[in-house]
Length: 220
Image (tube, rainbow, N blue to C red; front, side):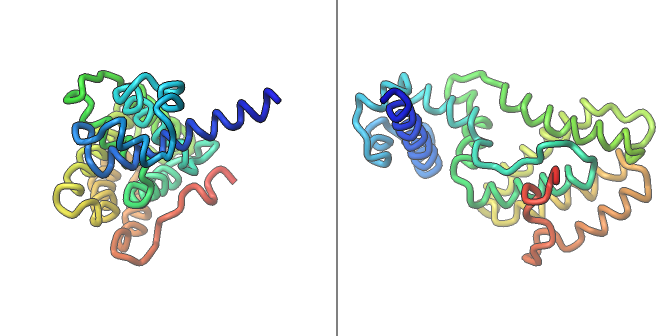
């Protein structure tokens, strides 16, 4: 009996977490309430407080578990994969509520009284591994600091998605990320790799579907 009970508890927690993400995405943190989240989840106050201490705890969980539904590569393989991952994330930001709410809350967490940078460290680590693989494959210019490059990419990506939200509710995010890479690649990649990747990004974000699903083939 213990295993079915544990499985039920996990399902209940996931339902509450996704309901919270949906409510935060729709109303923002300040406009969200435990009652709204309970109603969206179709659960009781007791069940919610069994898993989470309150709204702040829910927001922290959404921030830290934003990548739970993403199909990310299991192994790093260099710049091609890194570019595809970032384009994949741009499309996921448009349609994945848990991811979108988690990213939004992470950006706004100073206003919420939170100071949790672990999710940024997670993305920096993910991108740095791809950059390290790229360096090992001879794809990077000599002297490129992979940690600094990863931190810069995360910062630039964060700013790009915030601007995209303000200008178009993220409808133009793939185009903005493609543009980001067209500026960034010549500064970190050897010329032949930079030229090839920039050419591959020329139609990205225009509706052609050129680069959309990094997770499906990554790490294969």
